[in-house]
Image (cartoon, rainbow, N blue to C red; front, side, top):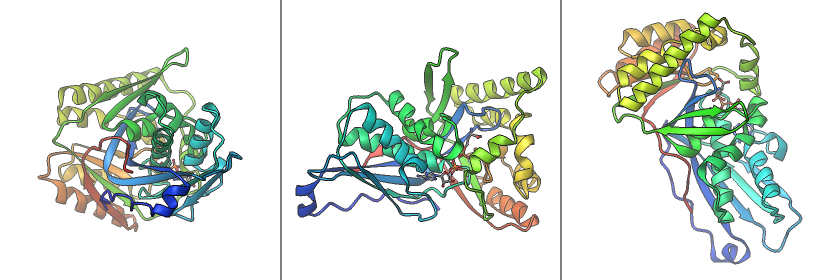
Length: 332
Ligand SMILES: Nc1ncnc2c1ncn2[C@@H]1O[C@H](COP(=O)(O)OP(=O)(O)O)[C@@H](O)[C@H]1O
Ligand SMILES: N[C@@H](CCOP(=O)(O)O)C(=O)O
C-alpha cells in the first residue's frame, strides 16, 4: 500500500552535538515497460525506501555499519545495495569518517519494484547531501547503479535512474561507455496498477531472471521490439497514454522468456486487458505484474481482474494503484 512520506523525527540535541546526519527517500520503480529491457524506467508513487547516514563523531577509521529495518536483507556492506554505493562514494571522495547507516525499507525486496535500487538511490542522495558534494544528478545515478551489483550482479540503470531522477527515464550506454539519461515528465492521466504475488522469490531474483534470457535474438525480434520501444517514447513525449500502452504490449524477447517464472501470468494479463487496461507486462524482472491505464475509471475493475488472475493459479496477491513519482530527495 502507498506509504506516506513521514518526516524523520528530529534528533535529540545530545545526538546532534556528537554527529551530523542526512536522510533521503527514494521511490519504487518499474523497469523495462515491455520492450525497453534495461533502458526504460518509471518511478512509482507507491512505496519508498529511506536511508539515513550519520557521521560518528571523532571516528575516522572508514568503518561503515548498516542497520536494516528488514532483517531478511543482508546488512553486510558488500551485499547491500546501499552499502556498495556508500563505500564507492566514500572511496572516490576520500572520506574516512566512520558512518552509521540506517535503511528503512518500504519497497519489498525481490518483487520487481526496484527495491535494491530505491535503497541505492536514497543512499547516493543522502551521502551527497551529508557531505554537500557538488555532483550532478546524472553522476548520482551512476553511483546508485553500483548498488545493483548486490542484487542483479550487473550495473543496470533503468531502476536507479528512475528512483534518482523521477518520472520516465531512458538510459543509454554508448559504445564508448558514456552513460546518458533522458527524462520525460509522464502524462498526468497515466495510472498504474501493480499486483504483487505472494510467492517466495529466490535471493538475487533479478540475477536468476536475467539468466533465463536469450544471449542472442533474431533480427526480426529486435526490429519488433525497437518499434514497440519507439512507440512508448513517442507516447511519453506526446503525453499520449494510449500510445504508451500500445508500445508496452509489444515485447517479443524478454517477456516470453520470463513468463514461466510467474504463476498466473497468462490469466492476470488476459483478465486485466479484458477489464480495460491498455497494457499489461511484467514489472522489472517480476514476479509483480503491472497494468497501465488512462485515468481512474477502470481502476477497480483492473485491480479485481488481476487478483482473480493470480487466484486462478492459486496465488494470493496484493494490489495497488499509483501514478508516476518524482525522484529521490533529502528529507532532513
Ligand atoms: N538495500 C537493499 N534493498 C533491497 N534488496 C537488497 C538490498 N541490498 C541487497 N539486496 C538484495 O537484492 C535482492 C533484491 O533486489 P532485486 O533482485 O533487484 O529485486 P527487486 O528490484 O525486484 O526488488 C535481494 O536478494 C536482496 O537481498
Ligand atoms: N532491467 C532489469 C530490471 C530488474 O528490475 P527489478 O526491479 O526486478 O530488480 C531486468 O529486467 O533484469
